[in-house]
Image 1 (cartoon, rainbow, N blue to C red):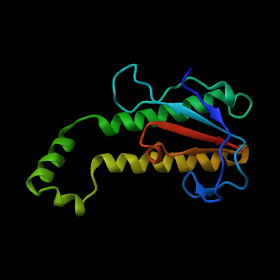
Image 2: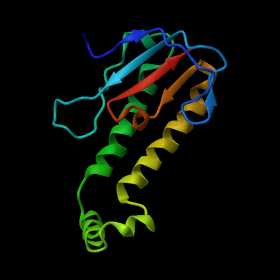
Image 3: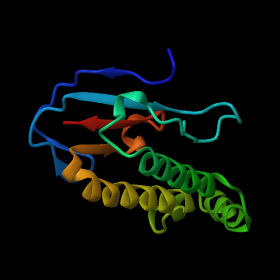
Length: 145
């Protein structure tokens, strides 16, 4: 298997991809798997899947995946703010996170907003990208109707 799986997907009529209901069942779904070639950090394969040929521009696809990879890389990069956040969390038995948002969650929100923006732009093409967080950060699901 080359990392891409295309199979029929049944829709239950609920919203998909953060507020964008599918008006009809998707014809097929493409899964973009994680790229573990450089370790276990969150990074997705940037190779254009042949199933999307004619449905989505390869440059657009690569731009989206690269931007998501950048956001997740920034989220996982340790820095002084991360160290301080961990110290505060440890000293307060992690009760501080009831009142403040973690740096990682801020980046997850940033990725979610980016995906929602891309879904608005791609909706005319019948393409919906599902947030990888909904799939345990294991894959990016792209639904084509």
